[in-house]
Image 1: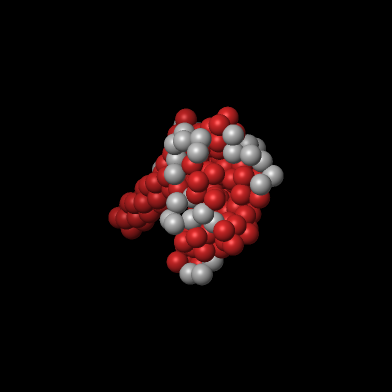
Image 2 (image 1 turned 90 degrees about the vertical axis):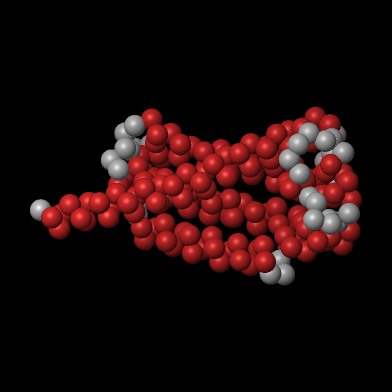
Length: 188
């Protein structure tokens, strides 16, 4: 059984709720409290390479140069960002899987939309590797390398936002389909 088929087959309300709670708790800590991300973002003046998608070759050097003592926080965040990406993958793919499963569309080409969260995680891995190496001084932010990082960032944004929207849509569709099914059973 392929990953896509397994993801749809194992999609459940319980699994979605658990992963959503984990993602919500992690996000609350990482983005609103004193965390490596918030410290690095503040030190960078609100500008970091992954918040500035585009192809400016100078961008990473400029924003990373402002980090100062928060450079270690920034590098730590790149490691913490991988579990965050996996949490997003789980929430989005479970949401999409629920929608496909409850509407019985799991055998249609719509199932391939579940690849979007995988693309998001892959791009996150590329982006995080490059920006961590840039920040650590292990890799010089040369034009070609920055373009690879920035391309990964742009594709990450596109696939990540699309994944979350489709995951939410999947949950809404699944809830409606389940409600309609319950109403039909009560009438029968």
